[in-house]
Length: 284
Image (cartoon, rainbow, N blue to C red; front, side, top):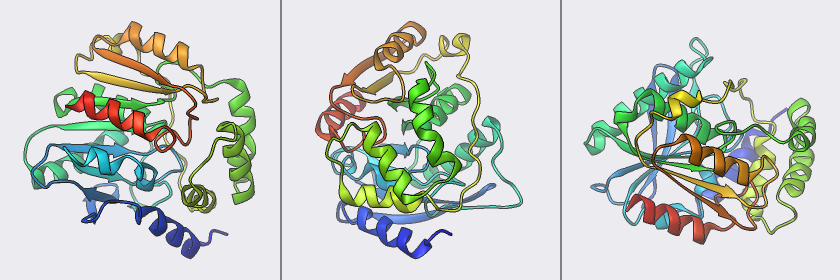
């Protein structure tokens, strides 16, 4: 059984690393209330951050201070995943169309506060998969798109990664989550508070995430907005070189870079200085 109090304590500790002035909002959508953590100048262009599967807005703790220098940052807890978003049980998210409808409603609410008609959109892992699908759904609402080690977007998972992930998927626990993350990141130093949050999230009540095929190549070739793809050089989820080559082949306006020494799951905070520099430069 999940220890919700332990999860909340771990989540609050990670959010304590965010800049002074950070605020929290519950944004109503047709699929439930979405929890959004907000920082940065109120009149700056909006940047929406989507975490990976099983992660939370807290994943961006090492990035938001730099990104919030020039952007109003909105970090989202995915509906149905670990975090503080509260799904509506009468209307679960079951398809890509539901995901894009949820983001439509969320962006409507956020843009109503800050003005404008488009956002910069950044996602990590599964969040990058959602972000890419959304950009294909509503390219006019996305100024620039950042995909951080995107999974199932341009290439599939490595078989070895799926084999190691299987125990955490079938019988999630803190011990199995720690063992898997230690293996996937190759033993590189991880933030202890972030790791504790991931352990607590393992047992968090969640719904089955929407998964599906990679976006169609013909659709990707029509995506004219600027895209930055940042890849984990030491990640075990997929072959970074193959992902970069495929993205460059399919996307008309794309920059790709491989961050050496970074693992897939911890990429937002391992190698954060270089990731922050590249994202800030791309957005600027």
